[in-house]
Image (cartoon, rainbow, N blue to C red):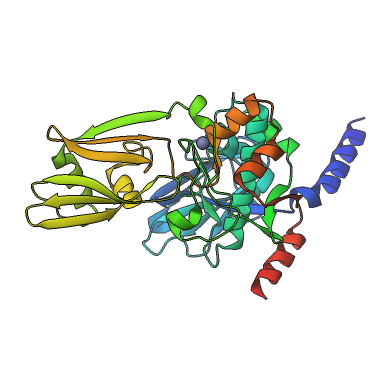
Length: 369
Ligand SMILES: [Zn+2]
């Protein structure tokens, strides 16, 4: 009986093997580390050899060749966090360590979806997120060049928390959309997304100069439910001067603050600050990131100097391009499925099932031609 089970398991591994190995993604999960500790109660496998249950790698003593560590079980732990797949440790030019988690993209998405969208939301909204995240990751993979990873595990890429970020509802959304990506002209698209657009999504061309037909501004009903519907933030001129000082702008005795340039959707292009010595014009997204992207949730705002304070009143949260997560939830609550949601936010794209590395290679080849 035991033999039979082992044989059956081996068959399953053989049968599932090619599918599971089809699309790997390499995620930078920890950078600039002095020490990395890997653990697995079941046992580590380091560069193909048994490596005990714990391995600590110190930057100062690390050899130059990358080391690949996996577990004999489904997970291994790195610096206290569980990961599927393997961890590759590399030496950085600055003498510190980079950890890259290499795993199947479907497994990766299990750790992304519930980190990017509340797991208690409607399944169809989670499924739309899963497709957007899969497409975004594959686009990053295709355009990562010689970088030792495809995507980072923070908001700069997609928030990925390894096993800790997994939730049952998100798993279901990943499974029910397995391999599905958005394409345009046969290529996987960079499916940007954000929290809440404030009623109108933004054209990627207006914001970043990215001229693609599927990232245009569309109407959105997120304001019905979004917790970022409308907001107001107040800052002292000293706070703003300190924030802008960190990115090289010098600002003394602010005398006026206003906005210049508005996108067709209504977002601010420039923030204009006047002081006795002159005028400072700062791109709005740069202004927002200098002050803090949570302190100023979006650039869909109005700004004035009032009572000695800079008052910023706006709506929405995030850059506003592509899928609006609160809008997706609102559509799902109205009974729309994930296909309709994706069609709405990425008009003109196709939903395609892609699983094989071979296919991706063909796409790469086509892109290079
Ligand atoms: Zn919206």
